[in-house]
Length: 188
Image 1 (tube, rainbow, N blue to C red):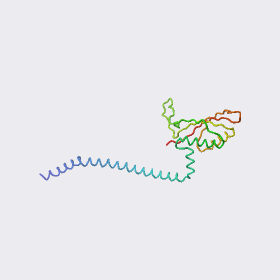
Image 2: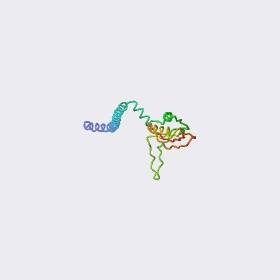
Image 3: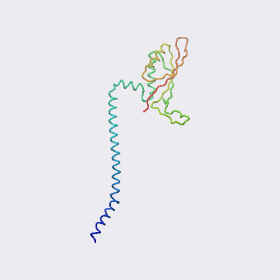
Image 4: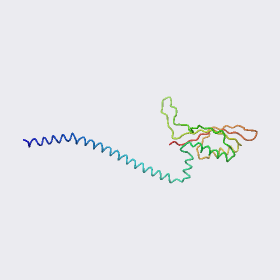
């Protein structure tokens, strides 16, 4: 009789062990396997990104330094209003013009990221660049003015001349020129 009960008892113990220990451990192992698969995907993505970064870094390093400097001057990664003023002053000095009455926002930037919402309630759009408005005056002859504007036009820094006001400064052939300009910079 004991021989016939032994298999039933062993089967019962096996069922209890399965539901008490084996099944919860198996569920934990499956969860850990899912986490390992997620980590492996993350490692694979990180390796792909690293190879893309290395490739882009090699391309970036293949450019001559003077070209990179020109690119930074074309569209800087910050407002750098002092550099802009010095660049314009350098151009003006070539033609005997003096930069005067410099005006700009001390914060140095107008944030174009907030576009007014339309009447339909569209979300505001964001831009990858900032805008810097700047005003100054100079006095000189018309020929100097024309050469000055031509050099500003050829400058590597993107400059939009929004307005120029003329006024005669005296009986000579000198005029006063009031400029309002806009320049741009990349945001990070």
